[in-house]
Length: 431
Image (tube, rainbow, N blue to C red; front, side, top):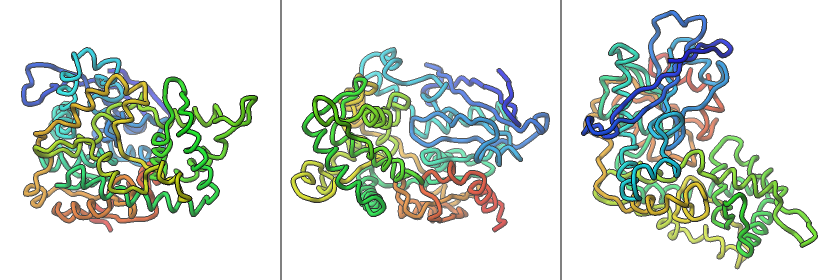
């Protein structure tokens, strides 16, 4: 263990060994990393633990600088574990550089099948007694971290003293097709709201899309395509995302000796926004997190998109309608245009066509739940369907919701201490 200080905090880096396959723990071990954080003024005290599960899949826990955002509120009463879920951050990495160590695409896909919420929860249950001496802890789950928290309630509620969920109540029984069939209308609403706020962006988006359809430039090995440009709509799910998207579009073109071209500034911004180099598991496992039966997910977002022809860029350019942005969906072409994903194309295909996924949620156990649970549900969350979330909330005994339109999906980041205060008050029956 390595301990050090930041303003107001004592941090300790912890490394844990867990089985790759919890059903066969003697075969192979991997490492999971967690960063313990405690207020410097309380470092010597016995405090209850809170484990934070980041959104994703595929993102390591946020790297804070001091007692900022919700962490500053949490350390007032908890010892916090910021967990890098398996395959992310400083946990045994899974990416284009490391996955070939597993063998070919088939072996890589088999390996990654162990990186869903069921395995993450089992990791937590191996780690928890090492830190708490066996006492239950509080889980704070953001987005996909909330999916993991609902799995936790389904499989190991004895490990939980309370559960706090922000923007992360999954459907208990929806197939990936259902998830995306609900998603595209939400995305269309977000795009309409963006264009209402910035009407000048309608023509800008059309001009950029037409240029990309004709030229297909590359930036640092990343091919820019109309579909890739449309996927910038993922920004619209955040509180200030519409403004960020507007500023990105405003300097798209530059006049050169060769005529009008896309500016280096724009191309670099798009490449940075669209690259999966830092979180490849997001692309590889994004649909697998919904698998719960014999059916494969089979590129659900791509197939379902065909049901919404208004999202087709070529069709939009032929008429005079707006080019619609997309977001929060993964498509086969991602593995063609992104150099961080290109070597993993066949692995992704094998995961997409994989069936026989283990059910993730125990509805009977959730209906009999005794763990205090509170969930922030964002009124028109672009990433997690509100109707699905509220249906799940009703299915978990005792769960209390805070439904709000004050924040978008990134409410925990934007609202910080206030969001955490509200959820803690709900699980403690103080409001």
